[in-house]
Image (cartoon, rainbow, N blue to C red):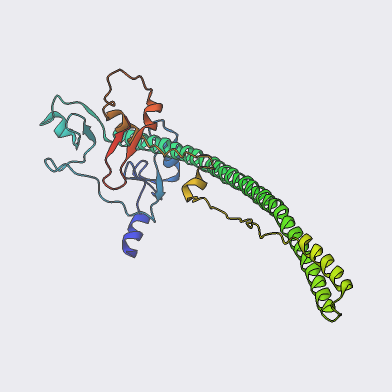
Length: 307
């Protein structure tokens, strides 16, 4: 390795053949001194050539024509192969040619231009995707907020309905309870009156059976006759019939959301290839609207449109 490097560093400039060839042109595969390199870089056709230090690069020998063992210096554009000067006048006579260095420079320039264009496009697309992702996240947050607010509103309505329902139950039941309470108080008064009359009976039983007792018993008979025991009424009843609410019933209280799928160029191309939906009449649908009705099976991958 060190001997090869030493040989490359000791090369002589192949242009002026006097100064040390400390620079190596990768396109021309030649050694240049400082002055010749500067002149080479100022020429229109070679100003974009790349140089490396001759001590860092061990250049391979120039390509040779396998038929004539000469340096290839042209490109046969008809056959798209590198050829030597003998091939130009020989087996490739009459073909279209260009200089090898010109073809290489053109290809490098084309590749560089195309690559820069694609990198620029990718950079632009990346920025748009990042902006689209941020915008999508903002919309998702908005939808989540809307659902949360709607749920809070529904909860408030449910709580209000529960409170009103309970208040109504208590109000209606209080009226019936008051009736029962009044009946209980009346019955307690009748019971007290009956017990008082019972005491008088016991007291009369202790006195003599005379005319005074007769009058007392007659009065007691009137009191007992006036004592009316109210019959037991049909007691009020209360029952609650719950409704069978399902998860779907709750979901129906909320709004709906739609997420359109990401559509790549390949997807849109397939959409255009799909047949139009069968119908008795001609339905005009633009491409954007047509894409909204495309469905893809997650299992088999088949795609179809809605009728």
